[in-house]
Amino acid sequence: MNPRLQFLNLQNLPARLNAEETGWYLGFSAREIPPLTKARMLKPLGNPNRFSHKFYATVDLRRVRDDTRWLNKASAIVFKFWQGNTNAEDNKGKTSQSSE
Image 1 (cartoon, rainbow, N blue to C red):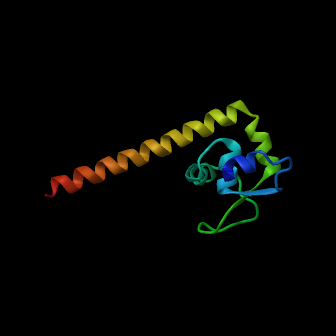
Image 2: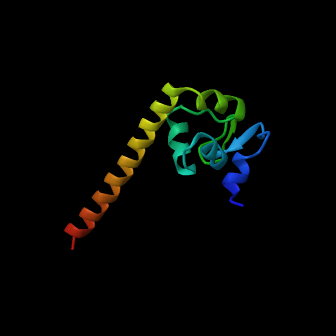
């Protein structure tokens, strides 16, 4: 069985979730969790440094998962994140082509 489906079918979730599990639980990809953390839409447990693995409290995730306003704002942040990445990739291609 798919690990994501196994996780989502658990009767009792762990008290803390890593970025991948957080994404599964909230409906985002694991790559979309860091921009949400940077925008302070998600708060990691403890005081992790920039490069460390981050964990998120399931109790907090339950609250935001049921909040339509939060989901709307988080989706807008993720959209901007991907739009910025696409523009950066486009600009990389244009500069490398113009220098040839």
